[in-house]
Amino acid sequence: MSDRQLQDAGPDEHWRRAQELPPYVFAALHKKDRAINPIAVVATVDADGAPRTAPFGSLRAVSPALLRLACAQYHDTYANLCRDGRVSVALLAPPDVAVSICGRARVVQERMDTGDHLAVVEIDVEEVKNDMMRRGAIESAASFAPPEELRAYYVGAIAEIEDMESP
Image (tube, rainbow, N blue to C red):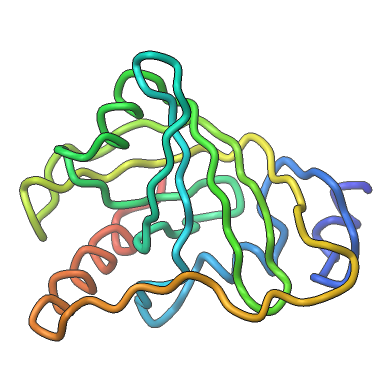
């Protein structure tokens, strides 16, 4: 599929691989309402070479070629990304988004205003793989609901990563 065809492709168009997020995948990760969801699973590599995964609700698409997330500095994912920037992100979002996103991550801000234990990580998208079956629909996805007393904290962290200047 050509770049132009991919730009025009919707969820009904079957494509295999792309160098950036197709528009409907970008829309699933570029929420206007600072929503905590969808949850994306971020895979990294431990120091011993073992794969590790962790769910993130703060992952946002800044552009079709750039993702951004807030990550706690004490988290294994943060240590793995600092040591080895290789990363893969799995996203399932109803009704028709099932993708794997491979890229390179780097810390772009070591301390967030929301919490000094949080860092901002950017991921340069290198490849997007379409994992959606040709027939059927994603009926649900993992979601996260913080306790009411922490909702403002989570929304504040998402707002901070969304409001950063784009490179």
